[in-house]
Length: 78
Image 1 (cartoon, rainbow, N blue to C red):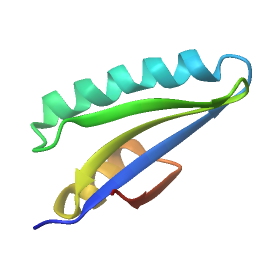
Image 2 (spheres, rainbow, N blue to C red; image 1 turned 90 degrees about the vertical axis):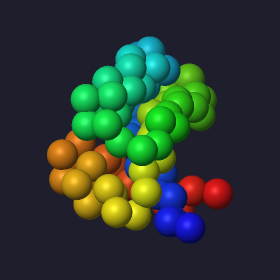
Image 3 (tube, one colour; image 1 turned 45 degrees about the vertical axis):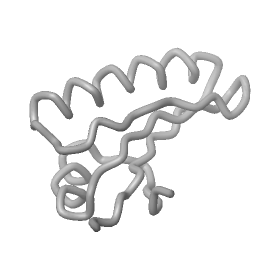
């Protein structure tokens, strides 16, 4: 079984939640265009000044997606 990696983009400021929600739409578009095998995305509101958008990719696609989309950080997905 391939390891899954969660790529995360952080957004800060009063518009963080809306920006993260909008960024997730672009992540979904990227997944469709690139025909990636996983279609797992989301956004989380941490507080009123911090939100994240994220997508899950397999190990084999992580480098390509990372280089193309430049996430702020990543972690092994559970």
